[in-house]
Structures are given as C-alpha cells and as structure tokens.
Length: 304
Length: 227
Image (cartoon, rainbow over all chains, first blue to last red; front, side, top):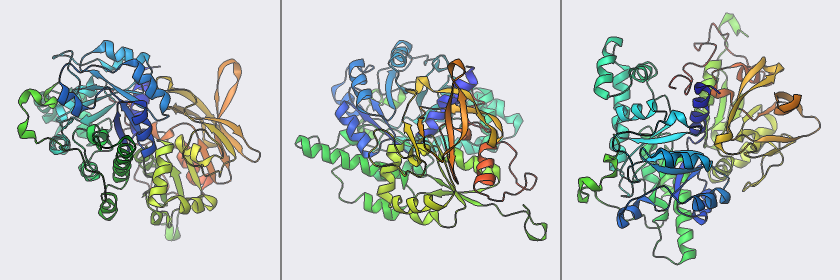
C-alpha cells in the first residue's frame, strides 16, 4: 500500500469519530461506562491527567495488560497515549493493535527536540497543538488528527479556547494571503511550505481538528464545537466525578456526566436542549485556576 | 433533467444523519454531485427530503443518540418509504441482524452483518470493488469495516470484492430504494456511487454537471494530499 492510501485510511478513521466524544478511561469498567454513555472511542491510560497532576512522578505509556482488558471490554475504537518522541512506546502500542495513538504532552516527554515520525506507522496518530504552526508541524510528521492541547487535568477550558481560537484565526489569515506571501508565512509559522499552501487554498486543516484539555461540562463541549472543533476529548471531566461517592452512586454519576457530554456534542448548537442536558448533573470536577500553576506545571508547554 | 423553460433542475434536498460519524464528507460529496445536503439530527429535519444517507461512524453511539433526540421512530417511518444509502455503520443500522449492539437495528435490508469483521484499525485496507451498476471498479476504502454475512432473498448484490483464490465477497447490496455498502466512497473523491444512488435509485433529478457548480469529483479530498 502506498503512503497516500495509508494516510487516507488514517484520516478516514478520524473522520468516523467526528461529532463524537473520546473519553479517558483507567479500567475495563470505566470503558464500559463510556461505551454505555455513547462514547465514539475510549483512551486507555493508567491515570487521568488530574491524578497525574496530584501524584507527580514520570507518567508513561499504560500497562499492556490494562490496555488489553479495555480492548476486550468494548467494541468502539481504543486509543492509548505514548510519550512525546517515544517511538518504542508507539511501536508497542501498534503491536497491541491500538486503533489510534495519542503522542501526548500529558505524559512526561521522552524527547525534548523530536516527535515520533508518524508516517512510519500503520496506525494513525493524534497530536496536540497550541497554534497552527504546531498543528502543521505534527501533520508534516504524519499526524492524522489534531487536537488542542488545552490544559489537561484542570477542568478549566480557558487554554483549549485559546488554542482553538488561535488555530482558527490563523486559518482565516492564511486564506487571505497572496501566493508570494506564503513562503514568509511558512517561515514565521515554522511549518512546511507545502502544507501552508494547501491550507491557504482550502481554508482548512488537511486533517480533522478536535478539542481537548479542560472539558468538564456539556457547556464546555458545546463551546468548543461552536469554536470549530469537530469532536471532543474528555480527560478528567468524567471519571474525576463522584469520587467521594459509594461505588454504585459513583458509577451512576459518571454515566450521567458522560451521557450528558455525548448529547451536548451532538446538539452543540441547540441551547434549549443544552439547558435540559445541563440540568441536575452531578457536581463537576473541582478544577484548577490557571494562575495557580507554575510554568513547569503547565503540560501544554511540552512539545513544540 | 432540465425543468421548465430550460432552467436547470433545482438541487434536490438530501439528508445526512449527522448525530455522529463522517457526515461532513458525505455532505461534501452530495454537494459535489449537485444535491443540497441537509444536516439531520432532529425529527423535523426529515421533512421534504428526497433521500437520506446514514454515514459511517460508531453504530452504538448513533443508536443511543437517536433515542435521546427522539429521532428513532420518525426515522423508522422514513426508512420504510424513502430512498436511503447506508455506508459502513450505516449498513449495520439498515440490516436485520448484527452483533453486540445496545438496541435493535432498523431491519429494512434483509441481511446480517458482523461488526469490525476485519479487525482493528491496523487491519483497515484499500481494495478494488466491482460495482457494475454504479459505474465499474471503485476504490474501496474499508475502515474497521463490517462484513455482510448473509444476504436474504429479494436482496440484490451490487458490489463485490475479490478475495483469495478467486473467491469474492459481498460488500454492497440493494433492496428497492435501500442501498447498503461496507466501504467509504465519500473518502475517495469519486462521485459515481453517490450519483448512481441519487439518480438511478432515488430517481432524483440533479442539475447537469455543467450547470452544477461542483466539479465531477469532490474537491481536495482530505488525506490524499498531505502525506
């Protein structure tokens, strides 16, 4: 199979996830809750971002045993994260037949200079970005799906909004430029010229563009969709809910929040429905105000 | 078919179920064919449609959202009379039997399907598909695709794929004005299958290619240029 056909298959799976919610899960039980709520895919990881923040230490790829248990538990696609630049983790995830790899800033980076060369893999990658230049660098390396970085594990949407607005603003700007202005623009963006030219011509990214990092409520999901996201990742926003409840109540609370966010993404532009969906929800994760984070605690700074 | 006074026919309204999945690529393909795509998420969106497309995506997610938005019953009524094209997850929903879904499928095609029958994404593939009615050999893009495991009496096979040792398998079927395929023409930029569905199956009049603003193939298919 040539690289073009390979890439079409990768982007094709990303297209199938549109209008959906991809949920972080830490066990087969949680994966079942996600599937029952209508998730379009799950992301298998050992600790959701909020726990990584609390516990510290080096965050790595998940244990294959846990990944396999999740693959067995659900029929929807299963994603998993590798550390930025950790091509061996990526190879292991491919051997495990993960459907999508997230080369993620939520894990501790393995390489501060290079990301994984994603064209070498048969399975697709999703990567985070803060702006258009970063998005196009990752696509140049072979990413089949782009998401905002946001600020994972904070339950605070402000960074995801900043990143999505930045990408959208720059897409519009590119479309307004003349051909002879694109080389200079590519230099400023730090992005491959061919991709810059393609985006200038079509007015959109060559791969789907999802939101991630800080989604805690249906309203947050709706906001990101209205700003141009085509689907939504929810990290800590679901399984951080109801943690002090008894197991049965906890499951119910998490299922309620998960279903509400799924419905909100499908109906993101219907405020009267969103009002109904948002009524009587369990208490959302407490969240973190960004001013209280030091520069080192900001995960979005990882990768470039 | 030109309308009165030689005016080009108006663009027919064709719905795309847009709860979840690759509805955007189908909408763009329909637009390139000369139809006017309509985003369908609520019952009232089904009014005045000439046909409907059920896209690929997660069939379990779509079934759950249909219940949540009250779309299930009106959709069942619609599917009994109007032309519909289902791709991938869409053909699962149209079929009679399948595996491991939270809710029964619509059963308007007397077929059985097996979900993710080729395996996970690493086993997704591209292969030629023979679809004589829809114009010949098509590029079949199969993504975590289902398999059609039983074809009932009265269901016509419209697309096949060569497998090993000269055997072939069914990848597309039709019964009356209901068409189901397991692959994704909307990802290829090739408009033949959609055009065939709109004109030969749904009997809709499209503006002639010269009158339609779209080119013969969908512009800038994603995932074909960036690699």
